[in-house]
Length: 443
Ligand SMILES: *Cc1c(COP(=O)(O)O)cnc(C)c1O
Image (tube, rainbow, N blue to C red; front, top):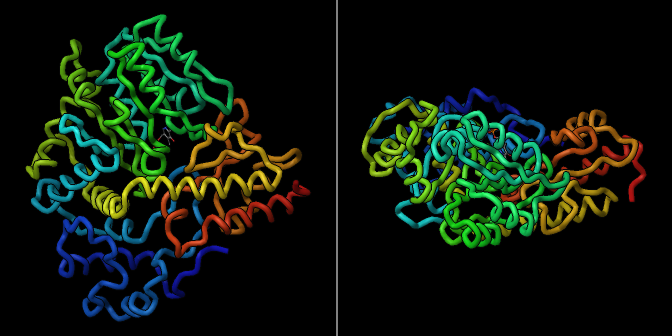
């Protein structure tokens, strides 16, 4: 069943409420995340709104909808969505500059970097823009890059690198697994690579790559090689210790485990990566994705100074600010542990149902999503619509070798962390029922 909402609920209320936020709350209060509904000054709201807000503090203002449990976008928290209904501000106003600056500083905590040479970027765009940022700024035409092949997303990263002239070597693992350290060691000792890329969670298979040992290996065999992580489906649900693990770049997006609407490319680069970008001989082959153009802007915002290269989205930055403020209320280690606990529970339920995962090895299984093989005789095209009727949206397969044979269950952010929601248990129960309706007899 979809989640319950107040009967007089209407999406238009979102924008109505927001108009009254400004006089009530100072903007840029980094840790004031529970703004609504129980802390709002309802005297400023029209009567029809204040009723549901003041009497049902636990109810979401979002219209009833099927729960989105795909590997991004994920379900969004009310406060994150509400912060997008901010009145229009200049992107160089003191208020917005402070919000953006705090957002960048909070990213340092999420990525666990205290090295002042590390540089965060938040750009308008989706996760894919992070690939362009790496390819256009850190690699020069003809330079060698080793791409660890885990599936659809590592293939995409490789394609993007080629577009900018990189000479890409793909070390491909069989579907449902990842390249192993000995073969990576062999590849690194055979050729000098400018960078190695690893897709932390390949969202097409649910395979988790290990970063710490990999980084130790790269630093030992090929210390000049930049270590670049596609963390689009891992940042904020899998542990990433940027400084301790010696990473050079982690790119991600707003709409996955961070839990902010789609539209922001979010990344962190090491001092070493920043030097590489500054010292390149050829100019970056992109104007919008040029680190040279964006670095002073990001540095100015973080120093609370107005600056302009291209207009950011103030509304999305507000949403990201709220999402990060919520994340950082607790130590990030607790967040990762909570995702792992939920993932363990889901994977056990999947096994108990007699189903197999695409990522077969336990230590290669992601904690924010599960790719599940369909049982013999059950088609995703039949199962997914039945699930949707029960209020659960899962994703189909996208790995070209097995696309029709599996489905994907995303379990990140509020769906696993908010105790008021019942998303995971409801999804497991619905999956069981839907499989039965498709004729599956179970384990
Ligand atoms: C989703 C995803 C991307 C692409 O992000 P978009 O926001 O769709 O552009 C890249 N890599 C991984 C691992 C992803 O999960």
